Amino acid sequence: MCGIVGYLGEKNTKEILLDGLKELEYRGYDSAGIAVLQNGEFSNYKAVGKLVNLEEKTKDFETNGFAIGIGHTRWATHGKPTELNAHPHLGECSYVVHNGIIENYVELKKELRKSGITFLSQTDTEVIVHQFEKNLKSSGNAFEAFKQTIQELEGAYAILLVTKSMPDTIFFAKNGSPMLVGVNYEGEKFFASSDTPLIGHASDVNYFDDGDFGYVSAKELVIFGSDGVKKDAKFSKLSQNKLSAQKDGYRFFMEKEIYEQSSVIADTLLGRLSDDEVVFDELDAELFNGINEIKLCACGTSYHSALSASYLFERYSKIKTSVEIASEFRYREPIMTKDTLFVVISQSGETADTLETLKMAKNAGLKTLVICNVDNSSMVRIADATILARAGIEKGVASTKAFATQVTIFWMLSLYVAKLKKTLPNDEIAKQIELIREIPASVKVTDAMHERLKRLSKRYLHGHGFFFIGRDIFFPLALEGALKLKEISYLHAEGYPSGEMKHGPIALADPELFTIALLPEHLHYEKSKSNVEELSARDSTICAISALEFDKADDFIPINRCKHYMLEFFEMMVVVQLMSLEISVRLGNDVDMPRNLAKSVTVE
Image 1: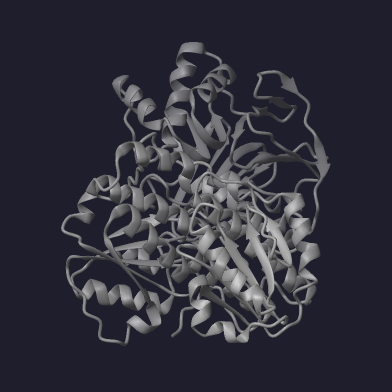
Image 2: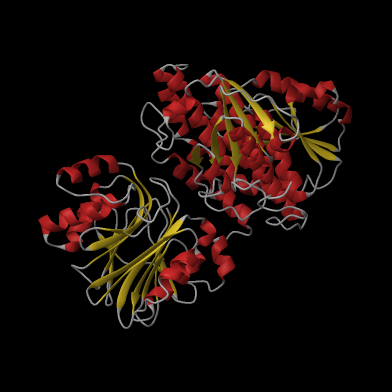
């Protein structure tokens, strides 16, 4: 993963590919490359780091006349960010680019190696081009070989493949990863992961459905559906507004990112779950040898995900866990012992306070792990080990999908450690893995839910503040809900443990105090309900979020009945995000760029 472009036509292929990749930079990447086939010969260029490095490598390369080309920005999933691991990947006479994860690549790679194939990279993608060429030798027909290859792949993919055996053709396939094709009146064909690279080039676009595959040439566009039946393209006019295209029709990037949580969590899970264990290929199991404590350190939203993790580690991994605010930890002369795994969490990997605590831990000789969304960031380079959250780039300052992927990773990591330390039976780990697979469905936004929150938001524009309250792991979610509201609405909000209300905060209870109560069915429901009733008795305005209707609530936001409290956690997460969004919209604020805040905090 992360961005794909393709071009077939007679213009400057290199420039069209590079310009397209620039439009996909916002998704994040650690390397990039292009492959161009002209007059039966390939030209291939790759570079690690930013696109300027690839531009420098290709400065003397030009095309004249008809050519086909494919390009890719890669965000490492299998293998480090190196030129060998960068796309496009080469076979004997073909190149491929791919987004997604091929889940059965290990089995395919083993068989290909038996047949004498040598692999140059550590990626799952390289098996595609070798499998294609193996099938090409047996079938003699490039399209039949491509079709057979697609049938042999398991997982998510958007694929473009070019081969010398059909030098005027680009083959494509889409399943679970976004891809579209654009055309214009000059007969050119363009591929991309989203609209923006095509703006200014294509006039009409076709969005592929999952399971679609086929090919384009100068004369035709051929599409087959998942059933193998040929189908017509469904073209629509392409908007010429690049910012609008990046938002994909949403009003704000934050709104788009809330809706994207289902797909990015699915990406985060890919390749990391088997039937009975969590698989983190990027971790050496010895990382946890001799470890008796986990210390989590972060700021802001990442601090809230760390707090959530502390409940999971102690409950499932049975390991002592502490959570630190990075800006405080730096200055309190902390005691750090070498039996502690020091874990830092950051969306950007550049957060100044958190980065400094990582350096402190390294200097103290502790083992270190970073949970981060940006490969090749400062924290990733310094830490002993990294787990990448595959959230894609967040443009909204108020983090949503980064938080969602961080909590997902921590749930998986708690089970990974539980397996190592034998603190949970295997059947319980297997049950929880099945629950984890349900997270993408749990965070899907329904029209009915969003419309309900739009209407409800008009009742929460005044008053003297908000309490977000929850027990256990729902306390960190309450903190996160309050932070989201503060960040974009500028209304005063606080998160509290439900049981703490009677120890002081309940003095504020009156009709102008809005209480957002998180009431999970499967975790301390009766105790939390009693705490909310105490507030209701003092005439506080109650908005309850639960699967069970609560008769003391002034407003009730229903979530789906879930099998487990963690699925309730993710459903409620979406509700508090959307509620904050809609309140901010009604107040006329800049949702994506709230005042006084920056996306990446690189100062103290």
